[in-house]
Length: 109
Length: 113
Image 1 (cartoon, each protein chain N blue to C red):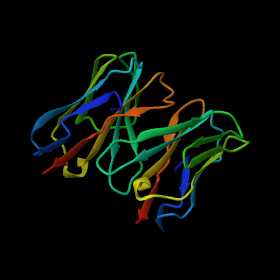
Image 2 (image 1 turned 60 degrees about the vertical axis):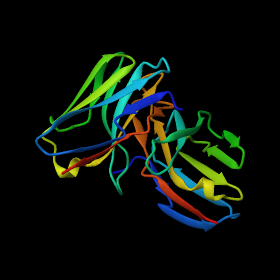
Image 3 (image 1 turned 90 degrees about the vertical axis):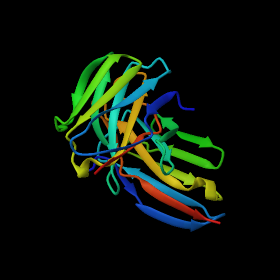
Image 4 (image 1 turned 30 degrees about the vertical axis):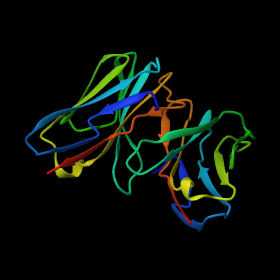
């Protein structure tokens, strides 16, 4: 069983569209991170959220940590082909560290 | 540049070979990790080192043998691998062992023939 469930697994959209990907768990996390991984490369850390209800913005990307610290979302505005990649959420439940299975995003020009 | 360097980037080996993967981090972190990433599978944590001591070993077959001679270097020694071991092997480091905000290398793409 996967402690961190990501949805959707795959997403293919046109350039300029908005999208949201989700990371859900039944466990409380002390922090959650989002990574983006491009083919043939390692994941690159985008953001860390630590406070319930926290919202962080990184240019066109908006990250939110749920009030109960069990879930997180990533919203991309006006997606571009350069946003294509595998988006991974990860977090620690005060004991161990887990990665989600990822959302594979393809943004078509 | 993420501060974590892995070599080699690509490796092809036969099932009877012995090879080693190397990872070096220049971030002053105390924890280092080996992950395996296969197609259609989530990242699988293999080993965790904190201050050069192994703190986690997730039921990894003995044909994978890690070594951490100091807090900046991590090796993964490979011997008598199987074709199903073909994958992207990723090294990461973080400030502490809980793994928040991990920084990854680019990985070694391993093919076992």
